[in-house]
Length: 257
Image (cartoon, rainbow, N blue to C red; front, side):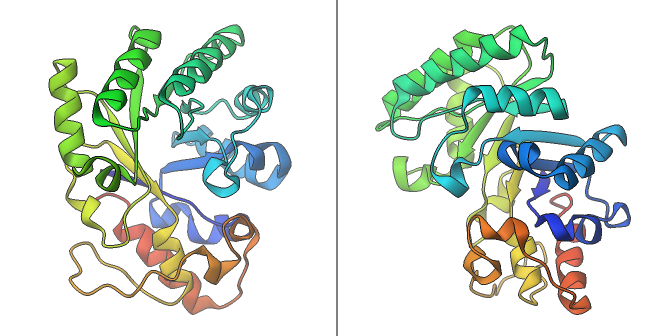
């Protein structure tokens, strides 16, 4: 499983230095539009052959990016994959906004992968949303994004959800984990292509090195310890030890081994 490490803009060159080996990334669309440094950094990584996913800032702001802004960000960055809009509170609206986004991406000639994120208030509603999303774009290259709250919502792990959806579809699909739980139980998910998280960088910027398989984990301090949910992206430090801790975490979690 490949890890996309979400990193503050002032620290991109230091923490995601090519020598660290990070070549898989997730970026948020509003920062692509607002920060020339952010856009320039990830454009450079795409030119080097890295895989870059464009997502909305829904986690940070609680709101979806305007579709026109998303399309503009896609045009500026030309990412490897685009996360389609979704509505955590409505399976029906998730399908509607995804359909609108697909049409808009087709209009600008986007030919990369798309990530669909199904939702539902029950497992049956979630499964129907999954089916409806696949019907929108079945002939294209797709990834299914699974939110971190799957166990709380449906009483099954994300690994179990992947098995359930593969059985429903009839063959394996490509999956991405949206976030990593604080106990790192997702490190044992072997059927997901990738996941994205700020946790390993945040732990590092608090002075903690985290190894795969580590039995005793420090309490996750949250983004509040490094600027807050949105302020995190502007966090900076000159403390070499903290930078090295974050680099270490990115390096050892470049891939789950």
